[in-house]
Length: 99
Image (cartoon, rainbow, N blue to C red):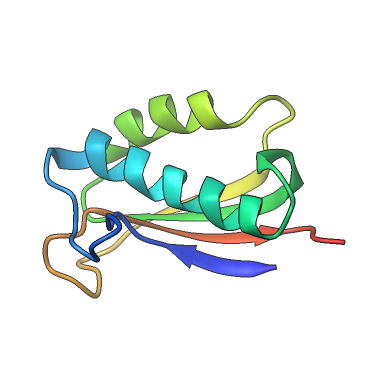
């Protein structure tokens, strides 16, 4: 499965609260998507992390470690000028094995 996850709530609004809140929402959205496909976070093979500020990576890494266990999925992080919605600070592109 290939999926992109952003920090939106059930109403489609970007969550407030900065990078930690947005990272948690994005990972919660990923977890929900995987559950809908009848798999867990351990099925994730690769994660591409996009952030709009290099300083956000420390927080993203801390929250990320709460959602994944070793051995962690292959991942890459990119710092970019902006995302599709101006208020977004993080986005994930995820590849997962789904039977």
